[in-house]
Image 1 (cartoon, rainbow, N blue to C red):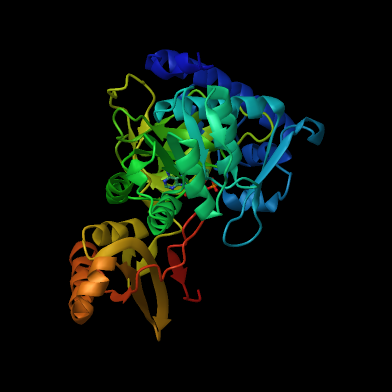
Image 2: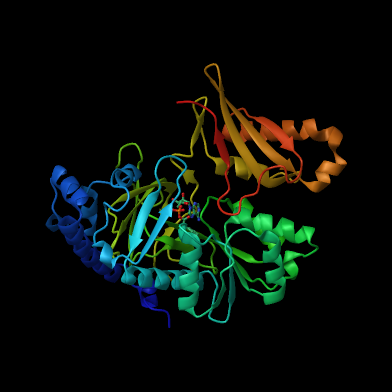
Length: 433
Ligand code: DLL
């Protein structure tokens, strides 16, 4: 029996009662122990005792990444360092990393959550989990690892990199579940092919993929190439790590949020107003069980919407739809908002190219220029050297038709775009702001 599993099917009123009680306890604690929150609450004229219903959450101020930077490294911890047993950090592309801490109880909570997440994604104690998320400061490797052990599965702590050796291990150890970023999974399939191994002949049943945005089309591509069922897992260091939300393998339609630990809200990123279910906006999380690093109304910058419809798996937890992009990844090209995931969807429609791409943005004079670099498939590469220009034109036209933005398309040879062993780098923005 996995600890806490009974929370997954609670009627809403029962869940809300638990959430409110946990929220109130968390707020009292942060007010008493974290000077940052006390000051922020005072400035907003609100006390923990003002939160009498879940709806009152909106009276509280948001927390942003900048707040974490201002309190770098440990300024927002709510327990003395003697009680902190683990520290992780997310690298971030600019500025200082975001540092998070865990007590022994937090590690246990996280392990239970990840065990529940893996179970929702199709894993059982009989499975062998090939864990190719990076181990280290990144939360992916150790997060999945502790969850897999808690579930009672056998975990192979292979981490990212050493890709050829990973293929040998896959052949020899017969893992049944793959945990990795979607982009690294595609790289694994390519290296397998080079070694004469067809992924579909390996023993995998399920893949639990996340840590970066990926599209529904990319899911199709990965399922086709690997022969496994691919589910989407979401999380972020500031809130816990992996295991904040996951798709159930039964429906594969939206990610169930572990609401007994995290309260999600969707806000309008410009006004901060809370949006109703179904409306897209920025995802905001409040943690309600964490000890070392509780976080209140954290603006994730991830864009999604919430779905309260019942799910065929029987879980009553809200589902968040696949993250479609980040508010800070949104490219504004000559006034048109473009998300990398939208370009990905256009590219995935085309047989001639592979799902390896990069978006490069430059400014010429006052004009933004978008270049889409994408790899040709092996077949198109050998067959169609003459037809390259027409493929480029076709992609450009599709991007213009679907997204309303002009892009220069540059086809490159297969494997010309650097592979990542963790999160893929999709955007290179050379504009100076
Ligand atoms: O990426 C935690 C994680 C590890 C999740 C393994 C899933 C699997 P961070 O490094 O702090 O934590 O990055 C968090 O990654 O705010 C999203 O922008 C993005 N992200 C994570 N999962 C998904 C996903 C881990 N399934 C940031 N879809 C988040 C889209 C995702 N974006």
